[in-house]
Length: 470
Image (tube, rainbow, N blue to C red; front, side, top):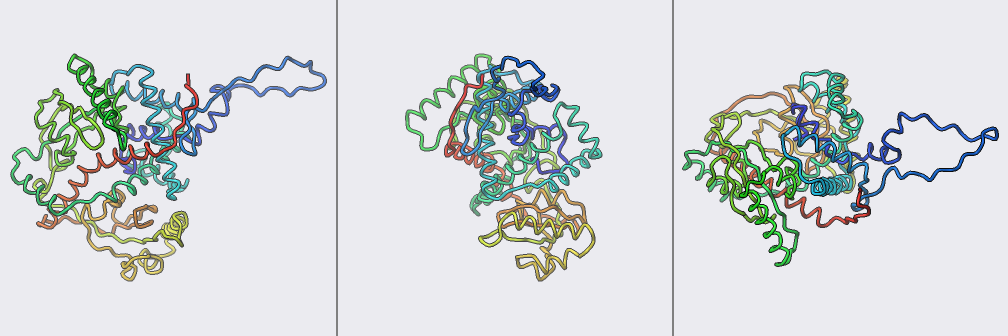
């Protein structure tokens, strides 16, 4: 996930796939090589008039998405970047026209997410972005300048990279608000999960899985569903006739998160996989492909790439973790409501963060004065918390050193400043086992819920194709 400051540089560069509004607006107003061209001399009375040349169209609108547009230059740049990614991952290139369709669909969904983020008041200002990138550089053991140089050596102008990261953070936040905060886990689900964990001998395996999704539109007719299944069956026939799974995923899969990675979900512990994938993979040996599996999102074809024993560090559920890390946290929360906008809450917390950085006040004193929750009287003290207690804040808390204070971070409640006071490990009680089980079930549900939300967002969007882009 992009918001973690210790991600490898290769993963960060994938953030360039976000909609690049600022850079693209600049690019759309000039030919690609215009920066190197000298300015034309103005016509004067002493200069013979030349025949006026017809203007050359440097860009064109390819698609209108709600109140935004995707231009030909934006599409071409995105295709070039993703083509480099596919080659680096050794994924065979799909046919050019299918590749173009896949990239364009991904851009449409990104545009819809960014517009929703802006409507919800999500913003990442320059100061916050610079601080985030500084933490990323530090996590990669680089100075900010070394990090910048590395990005540009990889072929991306740093200004373009910054806007891409900004947009990726905004999209992640809107997904957290719209999807993660609304996932519900029942007590019966926790009971069933723990029973399955206790009875399974291979519960601590990790699987590397890829999949192809042929999505079903919302409120699809019987004819539409039949057509989508027929398409899935045709793809499965191609795979069983020797077709390359990764290439077919990049060509046909409707999964916006992994289609252009050959459908690969990467290594995951079994208890972090959606049950549908786990059930399908349980019948496969490495290298084998499942039949067609139906979910609420559509028809899946699942491939088990490999499997291995999971370490305690990477894996597993409650049985794999006899101890768990607790974190002592303080917070200042400013709630967003009809009176206080998201921008005002963010701005106020940034001011408080600046005061803390300048040692002009203590965290406890500011929490007592400004926090909008019940911890205010205790100086913002949230006590000792466990992983999963506050899923929207986990990544920020985990990234902070002891004594560290976060930048403003958004949750469904508003904006927070967080301070890590101390850390310790503790035995996993039955209550904690249930909490860890609940967290694992949430992660199982997250992929499908995110895909379902993105499909709904795409179906609701106004999309008008204006130009063939060729």
